[in-house]
Length: 137
Image 1 (cartoon, rainbow, N blue to C red):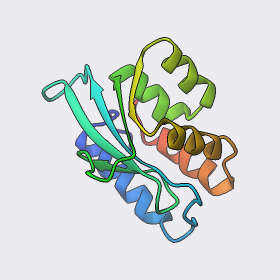
Image 2: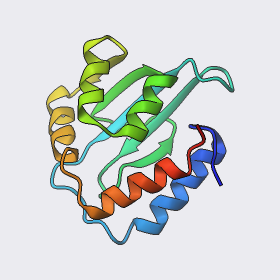
Image 3: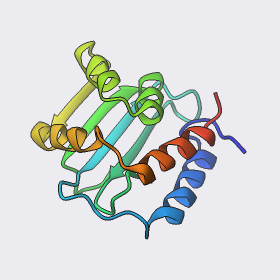
Image 4: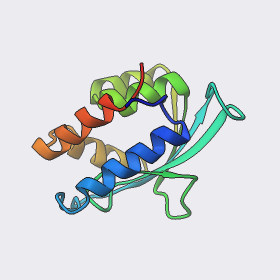
């Protein structure tokens, strides 16, 4: 079953996926807590606040912002969807350079996290494939 990106149903499916893998992935040596504000969301009030926390080893998607965030990223819905699903460092850099991503906070920590994500292991690749498969076009 697929769900529209960032809807409550999609987030619930992502949380279930994360729960399934939580004991199979070791925490990274350099984790990050990243708040994300997504504008131009095609449902709700048009703005969605999320947190992505990698301290468990997975990029856990949580509703709302965290007071413990290292960095806050603001982007539009289409760019957020590309970033979450493509998980391509070149796409991220291109979106940043074109002004589609605004970043506040610890840029160095974000760059380290991005470098660590550039060489995912098989489990991370499997999670990414499953994430894409549960997301409607």
